[in-house]
Length: 245
Length: 289
Ligand code: SF4
Ligand code: SF4
Ligand code: SF4
Image (cartoon, rainbow over all chains, first blue to last red; front, top):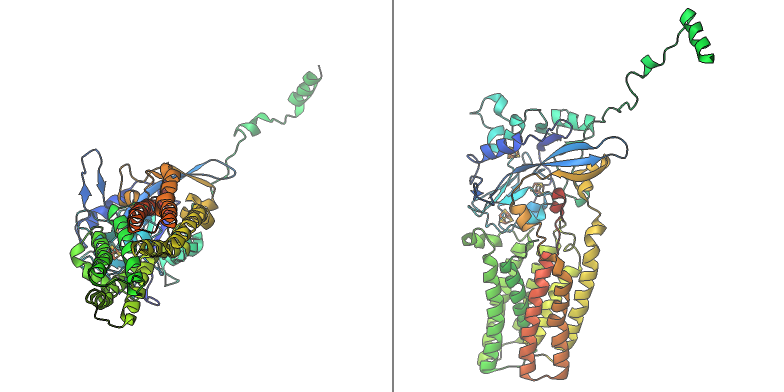
């Protein structure tokens, strides 16, 4: 049903660390790799080796240049995937009931057998988290790797989303935001984790951890203290005499 | 937003068709026999061709029946119900007008109101989308209803049609004026979308992908916006001003026929602009609008 649950027992989601993300796109490939063979229709590509390739991805990484008022510009890499919003507009607009939010853990999913591919949910999502599969004609989105996180056939350490597991710098963290003691909740509290476009009222679960403050750059030369020599004794007397001549 | 032909054809034709059914249902066009048959037939044809066109927009049209299930939350689902209800309830009235059965007009009134309600549900599909600031405004349903009533009045050959057309002209001017400032009023930028405005000024360093994707094609359509002003003038003239002047001068059947064709072409231009000019906030992540 496309009515949203009033509350969910867990609020599973990701904390994405913009400080550690190096923009390597490993999560993009890990996500595509896992979701190409698991949940629902494979993520199709059109014309992959042609002049105008196109394909479905559930996770994309942008790179931005940010210029603070003072100091040097920074490159900030910015992964973008579904935020598993509490007040998900993509769910309520769906005419078929294909889009739904699970009451047990808050994951937003698409039942591909019921999806008519109208695309309205992708319009409703402010974050561009949904992409239509051109081959299957159904809507694809991040599943929070629901087929990994509860999968008892996988070794314990693999029971987390592919993007989290695949990130070489540990910039993506998975956990339950409803539990204030979970790793993601603590990280978010410590680092001032924020939601995207909160004024649109979607109440995202995912949090972005802002880049840490950069060290202040020393403009003066590191040799400066060595140049300012305080001399005393005979050399000092000589220095003073010579200075007067 | 991508001005997909199927959605433009759907919303223009079914809008005009349901507008006509509204006036026929309420009994504004006092027609009997085959004249009534043609009139009702035109209303049904426009509405149904439009509805069929909308299914071309679907990735899986074979499952379209499922769109009836979520009327509690979804305007698209409510539209499905309203359109079917309007078409079903208008049917006995059409039969009665055609064969002169003299059945109570109340049936037609209910059907006619449902026809207009269908147009309202269509407009709400767009109005509800907060991520498209230009659409998220009460003028959107006013504009859709304006088109249905003006188009319906012309097609039903009503003497008050010029007044409705004049009102439509004002609505169009208002929605363009207000719409142009809507994105700025929501005050979203690349900085607020990413939350990186808390650090400094944000620009795109490198795009997330080198090739196109669904988002860029569907939501970040910017082609042809540069002709917007000229198209607006064409839409305003064809959809409203020219038919209004024509019908103010002459009220013969030919005048109504020419006015109707003129109005529908203008409506296509206006609806194309409605999509092409609408900017989705997702464009911000790409440094576009
Ligand atoms: S990020 Fe988009 S797709 Fe995901 S729950 Fe929120 S609105 Fe829906
Ligand atoms: S594309 Fe599928 S999931 Fe999205 S609104 Fe349409 S039917 Fe629902
Ligand atoms: S949680 Fe899974 S589906 Fe979602 S972005 Fe990560 S890898 Fe992709």
